[in-house]
Amino acid sequence: MFPISIRARAVGFVYSLSRISAMFAAFVIARCLKEFGVNGVFVFISGAMIVVIRAIAILGPKTRNVATQHFAKS
Image (cartoon, rainbow, N blue to C red; front, side, top):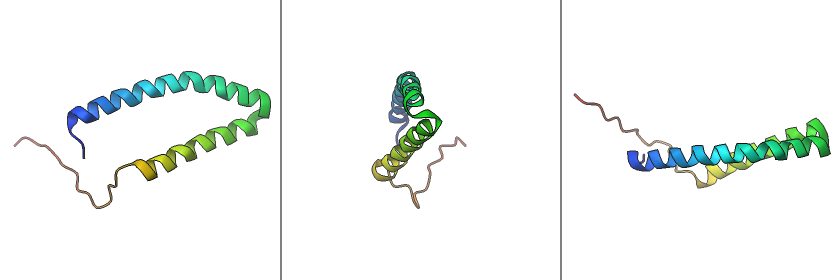
């Protein structure tokens, strides 16, 4: 759906952002565990997943019935 140069930058950006957020997530999860216990951590992680699912559903490109492009050399 997107040109290779855009995909390459996006993958690099998302990977970098995921590494930074993973660093902070450990502290947030530890705090949730201390304050709310195991159930609090479960609720926090489940809530974060729901936020991501909704963001992709709302902001992501529509791909239903879109053919993929294959660039094969013949």
